[in-house]
Image (cartoon, rainbow, N blue to C red; front, side):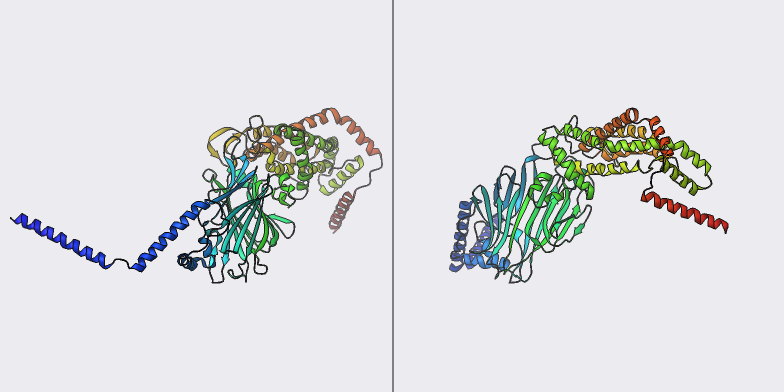
Amino acid sequence: MEEKKLDLNSIIGFVLIFGILIWIMWQNQPSEATIAAEKAKKEQLAKAENANKVVANKAVAAPVAIVAGDSTQLVQLQKTLGGFAYSATLPSAKNDFTTIENEVVKLKIANKGGYIVEAALKNFEKFKKGSGELVELIKDNNADLNIQLQTTDNRTLDTKNLYFEPTLTKVGADQVLSMKLKAGANEYLEYKYILKPNEYMVGFDLRSQGLNKVLNTAKPLDLEWNLKSFRNEKSVSYENRYAEVHFEYEEGKTDYVGQGQDKEETPVKLSYIAFKQHFFTSVLLTDKPFETSKLQSNNLVVDETKDTIFTKQFKATVPLAFNNGEIDYKMSWYFGPSDYKILKSYDKNLEKVIPLGWGIFGWINKFIFIPLFGFLSTTMGLTLGIAIIIFTILIKIAMSPITYKSFLSQAKMKVLRPEITELGEKFKKDPMKKQQETMKLYNKAGVNPMAGCIPALIQIPFMYASFQFFPSAFELRQKSFLWADDLSSFDQVAKLPFHIPLYGSHVSLFPILAAIAIFFYMKMTSGDQQMAAPQQEGMPDMAKMMKMMIYISPVMMLIFFNSYGAGLSLYNLISNVITIGIMYVIKNYIVDPDKIHAQIQENKLKEPKKQGKFQQKLQQVMEQAEAEKAKNKKK
């Protein structure tokens, strides 16, 4: 009986609770006005969705009109976007993209921000030939372009967060993409991209129309360009060495920001900004120079065993000046290879981004190395490895007269060595007198002690120029020769299970062969140099130094070149082998020590040649020092 009572009580309780809930819901039901507002909102969303389906990543001919009910949405958007609320009501206000491409480059531009979110180069692959991965300078949000807008109602808006309306048309063979950030039907900020066939250069017009009442025109707008450069080559450390920000300023001057952490420059009157990687470059050019700038570079490769995706973080901030209340800049983008000939063809001074060296080194590269190598590899159609060998042979043959003069001078000094040694013994206690008599002997015998140094100094600029030329030669990229699969990178023949400081974790063969060649070259020439140049009192022992250099130079070659491009190592190998051959021929078949000795003896019987200005000055200094010494002795 008790259990039945409990069940009945429970049922009564549930009925009461259910009744109370019904009463509460009835009391809180929406009014007719609220129901009408909700219905209008649903209809508005449905219209917008249908319009987006029709647009499908393409701009419509005219913006969608704001119908009854849109005013509520517009009011809400104006609270955050101010005058640019209109852009958010258009069908393009969604994360869609427009792609433009030609035979060499493919670009993807986003509605949100209106900037390029993908830039792929169709004819080049990452890391190694046959990888199947295209070189992509921009992808996966590694770059952005933003203009900070200051509005008349004291808002600060970033264009990278706002939606642009795209319109793609064709003008002849050119593709023209207009991206408009609208404040009204005829008020907008426009990015216009113009892509021509077979071109890496993309036209980029940036202008405003009717925004003088929307934007605060009292001061320039800040344009900011960021790019985190992808690694595209086999060696991240080698690629990173040549990744930096280059720029042109003050009508033709060029410079770069530099390597390392937190590097910064603030040049004025900029014509272009180049975010250069090793073999590829992204450039922003402007016809109307940027009055000021802030350029930054930050190294991202701290540990090359771990930091293997990116090389540098680049950032550029420049002002966009108003003219009569509007912005109007004719600019261009370049996304392409750091190829000297391609960059030079644009006649924009862009080839200066390639580090060919300053002064005479740059001249040698521009007017000798680049034309000669281009002739061999392009006009003659030689494979790149053979072109390097022929190139090296021609350079060494051209330099052989200088090599001959250098060796001839050493041979003459070698013949005079016994007499110089005799003077050293005779005036052992009087170094000044010894120097004077030695100079007299040189003059009487018709021997210039500097003749052996000058030819060697002439060759140094060519050697340094090669250190700049080969790492910058785009032609070598992913070109194979013998065991090297890429002449622009190291020719690994063995992978080490550990990392050796300075050397690396791999073994390259061309540097080993080049080190062996330089060892034999120095072994061959050091004996003659030691015999030709007797040790001077108070001076370092050159014989000992030369002995040390015989072993130090090959080791330095081995360490330094192990991670360098195989093309440079091949050049040095061939260069040293040819030099050994030339020296052997000169020593054994051209220079005759007996004839040199007879000629020197004959010269001694003649009137001494008139001393050069340098020798005369040196003689005067010695005589004055000798006179001063004698005067002090008398005192």
